[in-house]
Length: 448
Image 1 (cartoon, helix red, strand yellow):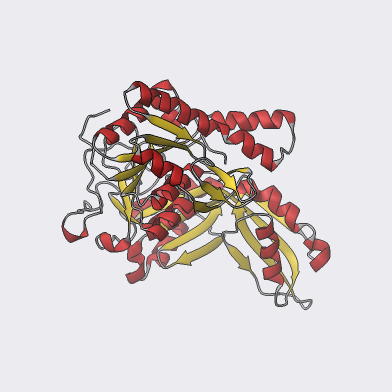
Image 2 (cartoon, rainbow, N blue to C red):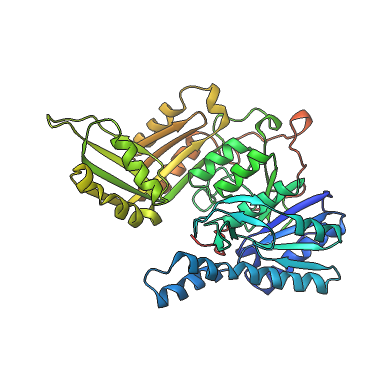
């Protein structure tokens, strides 16, 4: 790791992903960064994920003894991984001559709802953290977890440590939330698919929200939403070098954006189609209410007009592939209740999206994107849009080609796009320092 001088903040929250603390050397490296920030004069809170594949191993243990582990007990089990990381890092920090204290999510005052394995943060009662910081201590908090309003241990779902870190940053009025992974920053596309994808110096919260929602795995969607709502800048950077990383900030602090900022993708999509739905008011609402009650997030929705005299329609929705079983189980009773014909599923779906704040003032992006995909022989099965995003559901096997074609067509490569100058009145809240190389982290220390 390079030894560039750290930037001093009054309070900083630093989050380290599972790959960043996967082994002893990784924990020592993370502890060194934490100490470096403290010695620069900052009050430091660090959030750690579970080490490497720890959460996967814990999940495997659960399934060795139970076909359908009880959600409450899964949370009790899965929350141990992050606690291990924090305790080990605290030991290293203490050996380096600084006083550190590790806290569980409940000890840190993170209060959630009662939804096991997918809990949402309701409040952060950070008095114990403030007291420790006032006493000159470095505070380590176990990510991905909290305590419910009924005093049960809960976990926050995939990427939950990002949300933990941002929530703590908001509660402590931190200057910045630094997310350390083995990715150098946020890229214009997945570098594993597009080798000349460029790292973005600055991304707006709105763009990052759309990117996270459409497949970019660098930052968790809820974490970005929490940061935007509380005005907390996020600095996404590598834990393995001192590269500048990517700043996620309010849109008014960035310069005028390019037409398209990034191409994102997902291969974790599944489609559920209900045939023969009665064509009357309230039916679609009933379907979506059932899915919401089963904690299944719906992305895209298409309902066709009845083509027969019996006034029956078809409705298709896309859901996360991991939620397909829950979705079909929840919808099955509707066959008798509503007289639905069939419930068909397709797991081989993918999604490709274009994201860019510049779309708001530039017509023709959708036309160009659909033309590019058509020329590449990619059939589009579903489309959704927002003012700054266009998403297309396509067959999974076409996703990589679609990403490459769109990235090239919209000139997003390193040599095709102008350098993003962040100087002057439009500079980000915190200035970056140093160089970068692309990497990748799946944050395996948290449950999918």
